[in-house]
Image 1 (tube, rainbow, N blue to C red):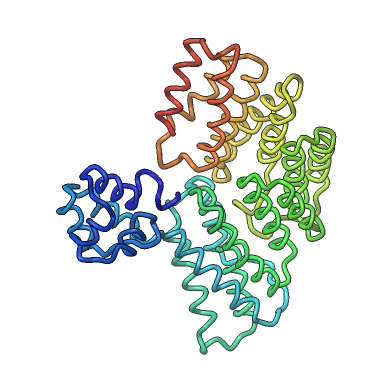
Image 2: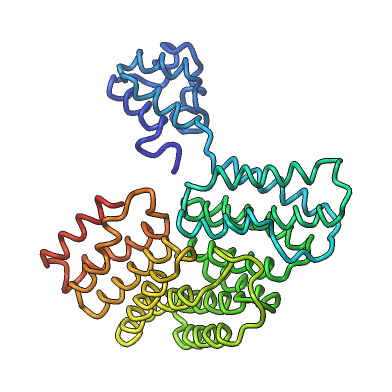
Length: 400
């Protein structure tokens, strides 16, 4: 958000000042500050201290509005702090000489990778951060004498950074997510893990798709294919290529990539070193397909998208601990999108019902983002005057 936009400290200060007929010079004199300082406060270039904000409230009759906005502005953003931590960590890891291959992450990390599927967003961030701090602290300890221990802990740092990337993106912080993937990439380089490298490239592509930077996302996914020699990585990356091509309007290339992703899944070699968020399941394959086909113009593609999304939902409901709550919810959104594209409003409403009744803490950023498109479709002919469509739009607005 622009610091000078409505609802920010600067905008509220300017509004209160103008309501009272004061110039910037007048307020500067009353507040015992220079005109430059007051101007910088209003433009969002600087934020006053708590005492100045309270004094401004008293001068302008703002109640506690300015003090509360000052506190919100200066309150540390935990995702931003994590982003800086990962940026520093990536630089430190980049300065280390590569070691030998480590094939397994710590069992605790592997469990967190599974647990995150059922607890997306911020619920596990504290545990993830503590685990990564412990691994980094152990790496810095002079008591380590075993090179295998060093490689083992570096693997741990890489996979924990990967889970943090998912958590940051689900929380709507793509910049932090990219910083975490950079740290995971440097760890993958040190332990020479093609699986982790392929996963990082796929996740970087995912983050860039969230940002709608599809050509860049396509480059990352295609680069990851050279590391996808085992496990489910190749299928995931090809499905990501399909999503990029679909969003770029390349229908034939998108369908080809999705078909290749299916083939890669059926003939994959070896297992994934770590499960949970690091594994591309069959449910995920159908989910990626459905989320790609909804961008190809409707008709048969929209019907197939809806069918693929429903198949993903059915598979996840029988997946036990590997059930991905956030992706399953998104599959409902993609199914509803396909239904609207074929003019089936009642089916779309049924698909949206589990989403609209979902607890707020489970509504990851992807869901809110994709619901915007649903609102757009509901506002178009032939739904724009339909009472059911109007009701759904109101519920989605309350949801968002």
